[in-house]
Amino acid sequence: MKRLRTAIIGMGKMGKIRYDAMKKHGGFDIVALCDTNRHNLENFTEPCFLDWKQCLEETELEAIIVCTYNAYIPDIVCEALEKGLHVFSEKPPGRNLADTLRMQSSSEKSSSVLKFGFNHRYHNSVIEAKALIDSGLIGEVVCARGVYGKAGNPNFSAEWRNDTALSGGGILLDQGIHMLDLMCYLVGDFTKIKSHVDQLVWKNMPTEDSAFAIMETDKGQVASLHSNAIQWKHKFDLDLICTNGYIALNGLLTATRSYGEERMTYYRKDLAGKTGKLGKPLEHTLCFNTDESWDLEIEEFYEAIVKGMPIKQGTIEQAVTVMKLIQTIYQYGEQ
Image 1 (tube, helix red, strand yellow):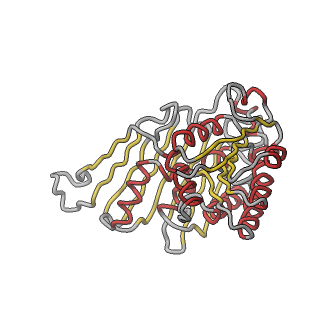
Image 2 (cartoon, helix red, strand yellow):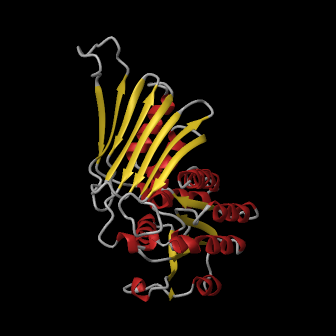
Image 3 (cartoon, one colour):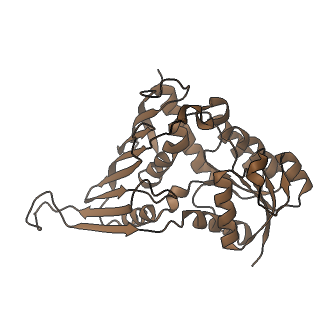
């Protein structure tokens, strides 16, 4: 197996997750780690840097993994692409659409691979739902409802994610972006949007704790979203209503298991009441107890570099699409 000389820029929670995934994969030779916080670099044997530019200049690299604050992502990604390096970057793709378009421009001038970490597309429930939709068994998706909520924490308002200079936005950009991306993936391209963005509980911070959106595609498909930090109990629910059935995604496997069991349930339309009760069709439920999303993302990144396989999930085009939605939700939601 060809081993790619790789550096990880940003060794916080996500940097460590990517470190473990690459070690497990075996195709990456991690030759440098970088973080502005010395504490995050403790207990690692790899060469360590405090400055990402120095890391890129003084290390012979083929690829980098970017796990920094949102504000620094565009500079690192663009410079790495200009140096001919392959890049895997965490979401969100910058603080705003302008950041994302800047990276798209650099990518178009480069032959290097660029991939963004939208790992929810790789969760087993989502994979099964996509396969079911594509099979045509329950018809076409006509509408969707999504709720992605978290409880915040005692220091939530002071977190870097709510520092607009570092993050660019609040809960929508930090977490709701995943639900938006899944809706684009499973429903279609949204062209009409109505929204409301507010601080319903966390009044003392500059970013939103709730974002509501109703979106419509050119085909007339409708989706509603509530992304929030005031759910108090972690929650992930996505309903997909189809012409001949219904899919429910409930729960999401995470390291803390706080979102509950991950399930994909589907029902086929049964207006004849074959089960004996109208409105209670046969239920088909799949439950999942493993999360391979981190492994699958790294595998696709590796295959794209080594074998020339196309990036299917987390492309720059998908990143631009979801950031356009977020810009519009913020624009119209805060009026």
